[in-house]
Image (cartoon, rainbow, N blue to C red; front, top):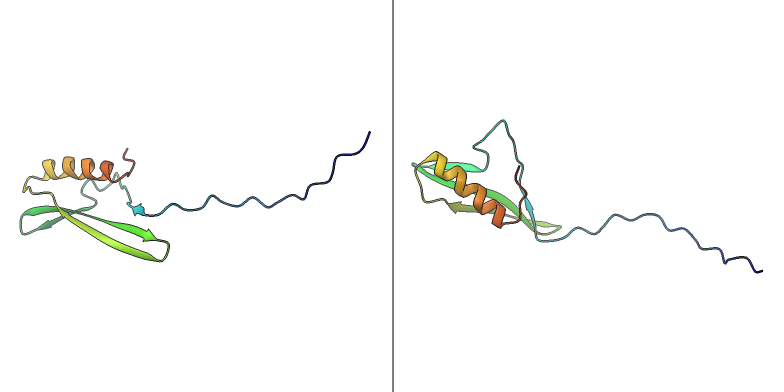
Length: 86
C-alpha cells in the first residue's frame, strides 16, 4: 500500500474583515453613550468604517427632547444598523 502524499500545513489566517463596519462601544456605566444633546434635541452619533482605511461619523437627530425616548430610539436605530445590543 502506498503512503499518502505529504501535504504542507498552511498557517491559520484570520477571516477577512467585512466592510462597511459600524464602530460602536457599549458602556453599561453610561446609559447615554452615543447620545448628544444639541440645544435640547437629542442626537445619535456613531462611527462607520466603509473601508479599512476610512471612517465616517454618523449623526442623526432623534427628534425628541425626552431622554427616555431618545435612549429607546437610539437602541432601535443601532439595532437596524446591525449593532448587537445587550
